[in-house]
Amino acid sequence: MPDYIMDYLRRAPSSYVSPRDGQDLSSPRAAIFGPKVVLINEYTESGGEALATYFRDEHMGAVVGKRSWGGLVGHYGNPSLIDGGTLLIPSMGVWSPQGTWQVENYGVPPDLEIENIVGDDRQLAKAVDVVLKEMAKAPQQKALRPKYPEYRAGRH
Image 1: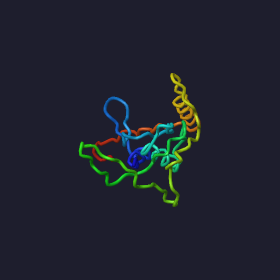
Image 2 (image 1 turned 180 degrees about the horizontal axis):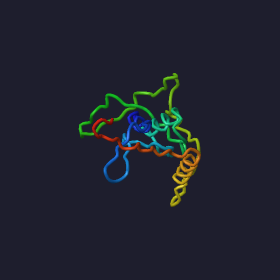
Image 3 (image 1 turned 120 degrees about the horizontal axis):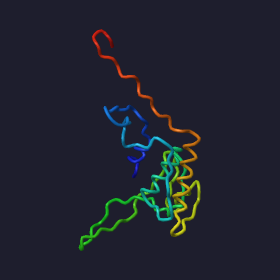
Image 4 (image 1 turned 180 degrees about the vertical axis):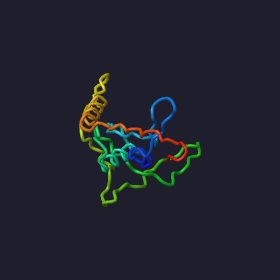
């Protein structure tokens, strides 16, 4: 399950580092501080469906594309075969903290349904459009570096 990815997406700046030369760096580094979207399509399955569901449930942004295929199920106790292969048998369903079954046999419906055409990635174009409009509505405020402290005797 992609809950660890959601941890990255939830991150907010906690500090900044000012190098002697170059631009200030934010911490944490592995984060996306601005608007976000998730792309899905009819081939999105399993953990991808869970990620889109978590993303929507936490109101992180729009889900763009086509309904996923509905294969969010778990497997446990997979038997090994004599040729070294393994059988992956669905044996677990996924349900929400609110007590509803999630995704299986239904999929994740997008907020913005966009059909892709070969050679024309309309889903990606729409996702970029959505993010640019969100950025225009609420521009990211650049953190202002404080004045450097004076460390002369008697001053703090």
